[in-house]
Image (cartoon, rainbow, N blue to C red; front, side, top):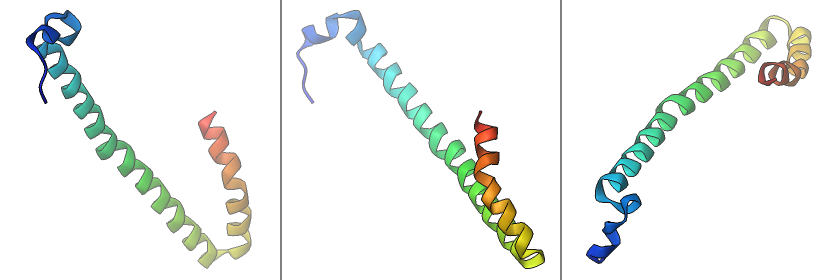
Length: 78
């Protein structure tokens, strides 16, 4: 990558500002991959395990709960 020195004369393109922008992007990407994805995987696996246990103990109740789960999710989202 090559830029002429006059390109960095603007305050918005100063090397310190560009370095801060890149550092913030890396920090938010790191937070996304470690926190959000792990919580989503944990929730999906917990839901799947709960359905399997419910099917084992009471298949009819498991069917009712599975059919109502989108409504519960919409209520939590709202």
